[in-house]
Image 1: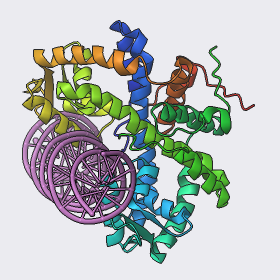
Image 2: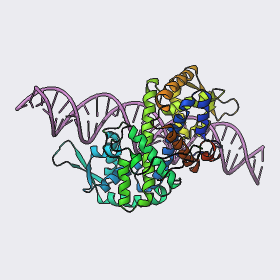
Image 3: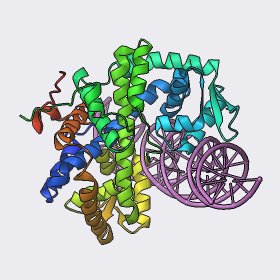
Image 4: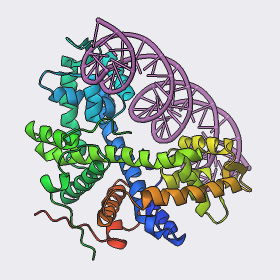
Length: 186
Length: 186
DNA sequence: ATCGGATAGTTGCATGTCCTACTGTTTTCC
DNA sequence: GGAAAACAGTAGGACATGCAACTATCCGAT
């Protein structure tokens, strides 16, 4: 993260220009979109982690915590966590290892299936989740640096991208919660 | 990456619901936006890296290559690369180390400033850049998994986010190349 | 019942990113 | 001029992520 030295020109717009100049106009927008995604994620992640740092957790671990926080029982199998967060099983192992070291969660054997390990949210973890969320909400999520209508549009567009990538098979998101973002092309 | 097992419901929409249910409605959209960004970046990166893998480079290294490819002289100072790509100096060192090992670039001393190291694109690197770009363009950038108008909208919205985050000080992107995406909120 | 395939988790390895700290250079300013 | 500040690049350390490989367990088809 950290915007080491502000540039005068948008580097992505610059790259887009280069793409067009080299006869790759058809791919210029796609390139710009992918590159923007990379950078925007970096920015968003940096903001979130800045808030979470004092709590001693990263966004990845925070997500695990919240998943458990929302689950009625307060515990979930590792595999289910990985599926919900859409990350590799090894990432779950890593996150849970660290959360366990910090006494925020605990591993428990599954009562009937000896293959699966349950991750249980401990009181300390539950409290951290609640407190950190409050702060994240006010300092980042409630003020993401975009006008509300663009936030919604962003979510909708990315939902379509995620759906297209096979993240979930449910209904196309565009038609349910929000409307398809209709961009006014001048 | 990898969409390990497709879920029936959109996990982010699910989280958004939970947020609202817990009295955090004001932050729900922001949370969804940030989370979507994380996942979308993962998806985009995975697609790109899948194409680049046979070439033996990652997206980070590819970006360095392209920067040099576009520079007239074919060489740039490390610091300038870091600023353009908006990454930490140590990341540039890392990428250049590997590119140099693969004989794609070469480090040269700066003629007048002995602090700076120039990175020079070698013929092999130039060729790889051209070939890989062709394939990336056709396999990813030209078909990013979104309708063209949404790709443009995405780029515009993210440009605003990046500008807001201080990535560049030039003109607000929304008013120059593309129009402000006007989302129809039904 | 049993064997083969699917599942759950872990470990080892490679990568990228950032941060902090440190060494040289160059520039700035008194 | 000369000291202080800024700048360029690198080394070491902490994390997260993914892949491949491996063990243990469960499940289904024969």
